[in-house]
Length: 371
Ligand code: SF4
Image 1 (tube, rainbow, N blue to C red):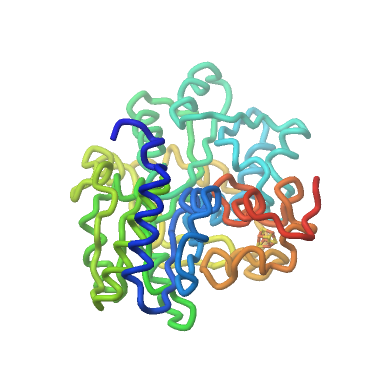
Image 2: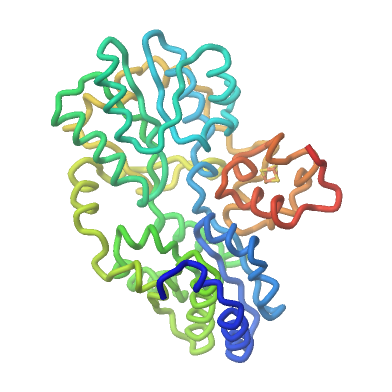
């Protein structure tokens, strides 16, 4: 196949959904890990093509959704420091912090917050403004981590002493383990995110499937990719096999991207990490190694951390319930009214990868307000 549209061929989609129905005998709850997959499922109505006894759950793989509100508080506090520029991807701008509003409001009030499309643009800004501190908001999963690692690596190599990272990097396997600690709500199988596995490789997911005692299919993002992932876990589940299948071999190799892994291991080390609404999950994130401490914004601006409010696990937005697959977005009492993409109460309604935004855009509730 040469074109993306070929992965949305109606005849192939029909054949795959029929094969899934033929193979699936037992009720099954399948969690797609990545928010990009959630949006593809909603956009193409793939869930409606599955037998009614197969339920798709929408997982925690939306970077903006899991970035803690307190991180946003600290980012806003840093943005308000004199002679400071904060760089970020655009989808973080409207995510609510715990007590400081959002970055968009801070920008409107005069903070210098700039949208970049690559972390490396931060280096250019640092070079153009040597009199200022430039702080990049380094969030995301294994997919974004290599580019953020490269920013720290090059800042050190080029002695760009005014370039910093405020890091909130997450790892997928630890949160899958956390999800599986509650057997009453844990899914029966996972669709792992293909772009994450393109970095890490497929290999680590084979022992993870055995450890979690659940099938895992490494899955892509187009309609036939997702249905191939569903078919793969259905076949394994029906056979009673807790194994990993790579259903996205055109992008994911067993060993992954070794160059990306090398820069990751050079710059970052595994650490405990706070997840929005979930609290601290042990060994679930990445932090800068001590050799890169000179580029750690949390160390450069320690006063912004000491002013943070204590962690708040309970909030009006039950994002954690949604991101752990315990609640479908339309079952949230705030879904559609008052919570909408224009008036988000929580990150899952803000981000282009957020599950609540996916449902709102593609399956709006009858009581949804039209902002
Ligand atoms: S609908 Fe809004 S309030 Fe409810 S979980 Fe989603 S983002 Fe949070």
